[in-house]
Image (cartoon, rainbow, N blue to C red; front, top):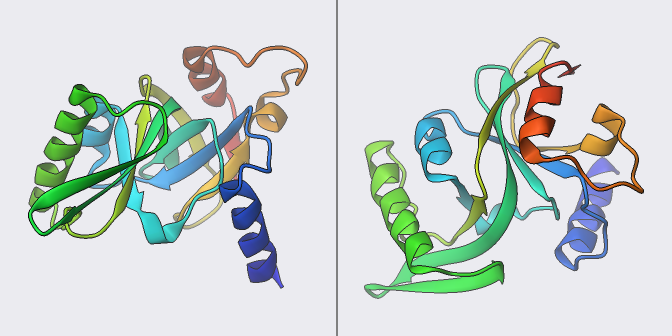
Length: 176
């Protein structure tokens, strides 16, 4: 039953039917973490789908270690020697194309072929260091969604705090 519910939520999210004012999607970022933070980008296979979110958190060593506000989402795949870009949100700039190319090359050094399988690139304004610790036993097996409004207890009627302030506040909280 939970799988059916998750599929429905994913569908509603992809159709932009759910609010995303203060939703953080946590992604696993072990071997690529340093590149992700330095380049302000995270990539994942398109087939994994995603829920609408405004913030992206990078998980490593039992904690969300970085958070950034999503400013662009671009789907990319190389076919027959040429790269196809599909904008989902934000702008595809020359700088972002360069970062995508660097990500494709960096992934090879980590043992991943992201060039020939369509990936979604999540660009953030800037990743900020945080330490939102998982206190239950074991690591995470995949992405997870957090409602920052609920965790940080800020008023929905007011504007969302600056990402740096969110990162600082998350250091005071933990999750299971």
